[in-house]
Amino acid sequence: MPLTDQHRFGMQLAQLSRGWRAELDRRLVGMGLSQARWLVLLHLARFTEAPTQRELAQSVGVEGPTLARLLDSLEGQGLVSRQAVLEDRRAKKIALSPPALPIIEQIEAIANDLRIELFQGVDEDELRIAMRVHSRILANLEK
Image 1 (spheres, helix red, strand yellow):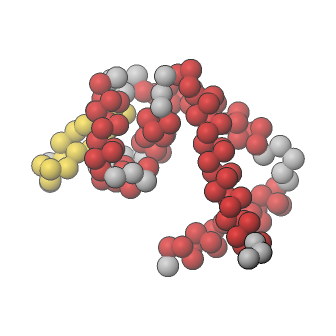
Image 2: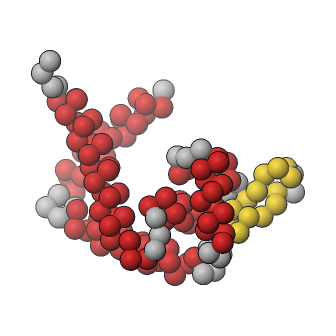
Image 3: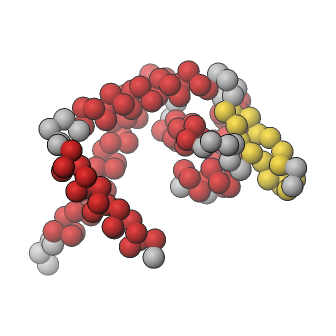
């Protein structure tokens, strides 16, 4: 069966996502953080208010027990803290600890350098078209 452009696009998108994340992981290896842990820190930094553990798991795209183990590790390193939720004693809010902030800044700087490299030769119009296509596909996926 011949591959359609839609099939090639899907394969290319998956390859791009894996490759981008793997390259960022390679560049961050010297910081002693696994991909899973730096990903949790970055997602956590994007929230304006401390999310619940469930909200963070949803944002990162992992199951609750997986996130719990990652948080145990990050908490052990002093990078995050769990705080009780008054309205629901089973829930915990996750907050970044002050020592995490310079680490996140370093991760962001390395990620930004990579982003600049990866977008070399891509002009703004091409990027806007690609973003429109991705947005449409994401909207169809969410239906």
